[in-house]
Length: 162
Length: 162
Image 1 (cartoon, rainbow over the protein chains, first blue to last red):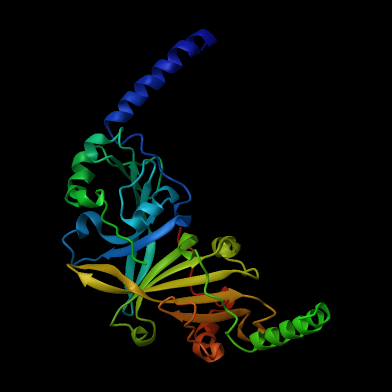
Image 2 (image 1 turned 180 degrees about the vertical axis):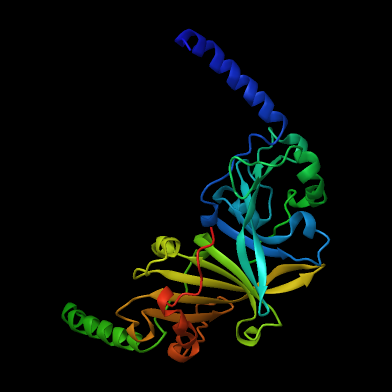
């Protein structure tokens, strides 16, 4: 590719990609280092739960430093807040529920402008925690619908447990 | 206090305090900020477990940055490694195990020299997470006895789950 072509083609490509990203969940990136973020809570969705088919497993929820204060105060979340659910399998051993292998990583990113149609949140789920395996194609239906009842809590289910 | 007295009394006091500390678990401090440390794993000890009476609850385990690499590599833990178990109550709601209020904070601090008689680990448990409510008076019996079978893993039960 000549340098002239590069100068013309690359910006057009970037423009096209960013337009595409704004429509869906494609631009929500797989975060790194989230196991060193603030641990919000853990929940296990067991077989008896009606949510088991879609959400079964151990949910270890983390929030980045941008959102930590809002979680604790209970206010609205600033842009660039990221919640991560580190979703693991679990097994039951002698009456204890024990964490198993990683199933996937669910991400919520706050950007009031970019994700205005889904409550200001971008959603994605990475199968096996693999940045190259995003599975959400319709965040409004696959994610936001279930978060909508939490509108007065900024569409977030997690609460601060001291 | 004159400067002469200070020079004599203060070192003696420090010596006396450090001798006292070496005897028990009194010098293991309640750590701060551990919910921002690396989240090692979570385990729920449920009613059916033989451990429920003593250890029932949701165990959210964290390790500080000093011990994080050793946890991942599986080697022995360097001095100043700290493990914290943030122990919470839990409730079962519609098939899900949900985190409840804090019951207490269990701490393991590595200091090969100071805690040589208990595998190089100092142990303490703070009721309700209150720094003023340490409950362990005999770490050898109340803590180390149960960790002894894990000798080849540095007396640590937690393993790294990617």
